[in-house]
Length: 168
Image (cartoon, rainbow, N blue to C red):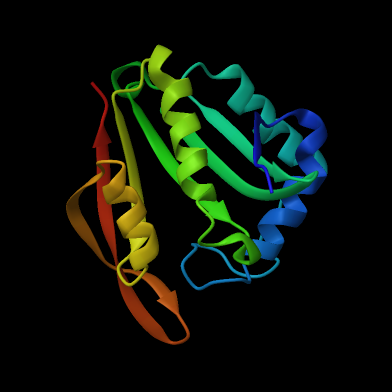
């Protein structure tokens, strides 16, 4: 089983919507749930085009046998004073968890952003999502704070850990 990683293209819009709607229902660790991608195909195409057009943004797709199994985004700030900051997110289909896919996606993304203005990646992660927290720590993300009660899942509040990666 080989992972093929590529930047998202406009033609991937429908597939990305289907993917997001699926992974939203596969765990309680995301900011959205099952079928909560409310963008239509045209709107998703615009989102992808923004990623393509912005020098400090990246949208990567991970494929196994033509199936989209992972999505990684780094959304760079566009204000001049903040262009060094990118907001990081990654998902992997549940069927493909614990296969090293997230690590491969992160290695590729970190290599690709070396030539950009990005100096800081930030993220929020649900406090009990230990797999993700360990992944981020493996790549030298540091906990910089907490966002109390950021997540509300199954009638319970959860804090988010705020983590940053400082790029040399």
